[in-house]
Length: 299
Image (cartoon, rainbow, N blue to C red; front, side, top):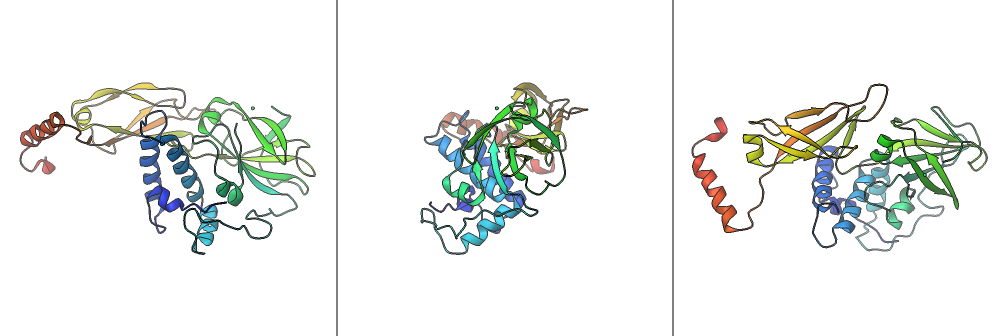
């Protein structure tokens, strides 16, 4: 398997903090998202960005990756796994592995990621129960990383484990840390799938609320506008009030994760200046500059 420099993919230094990595991920995921990008190779770049963030956003994964990185590997170098592989066995007599399912953004991960952190499978029903707590001795516990779309809709996912294919129904609105039990599907007992929310290029989760950063143009912020905003249930029109500033938060009630009380979607505005691509656009910026002559920052 070939080494991947995840920091290089995200364009951040190895010393980067969580906030800096999150910002870099959002920017690149937005840039290369297959639904909007027209760049050559955008889909592969999007997958690479998603994989890098998935590896570095989790402190345990990042620590394991950093230890490997200190050996001086460069992108493309062949990596020889240590005896027994990179995976760790859990405590208490059960195996611990990580499974990704539910059609998460970015598709399958590379051999390098899977060898280090577990297998990513794509995501459909089996006999199961839902609960929390440690697995009894002999049961198998695995983390199941599921896309927010699956959590929102309560869809089913298909996973492969030790050569077997299992169909698993993910309850609508299930919380992170809750587990789905598949009776008799473990190595020596039941299989407990602990739910984890997969990283998403457009949304973050805060409790049952969903947060989305919405880029808007300066004129939309100044004059107001109605723009289409993605939600987990599909796009909706959102009215941007005039004289809005970056950081302003707008609320779409009931558009968050489902539960006894559905969460909301919080839309945070981010004003971006479009790049100039022709003389007409340059002239428009010059007109704007002249119109706002003076110390407009104090206005």
